[in-house]
Image (tube, rainbow, N blue to C red; front, side, top):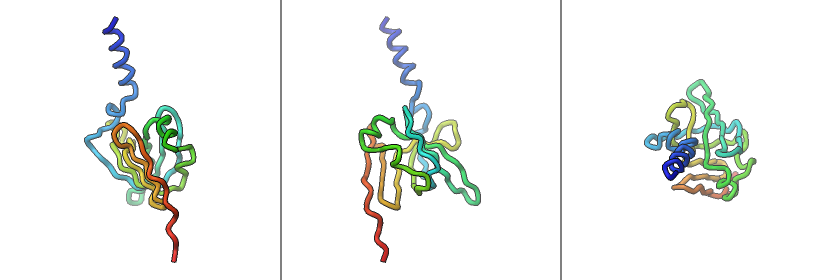
Length: 132
């Protein structure tokens, strides 16, 4: 009975393992423009257009779980189409244009998101810079 419970628990953890899908030993930094923010369970997805020379690549970027994001103040309108962002994260093991976000910065207003350890955190937006 105990072995059966352990087997079920192990398969549930492997169902959607961040470590299984993304390679934490590799890092990538991408700059792009938000095309879409899918604030869905279990992990919100950010769709970002990244310029590579003359071409634009569409990337899917996964965030921490939705419940924890809500707890720190992220909503479906936190990231909007057209937002220019810089993202640092772990590339997917199999999908060429997929990334798990470890840090996200929106330079226009100083907004920042970070997945540090097992909990996400936000750096609040700063007022827009004044023009002189």
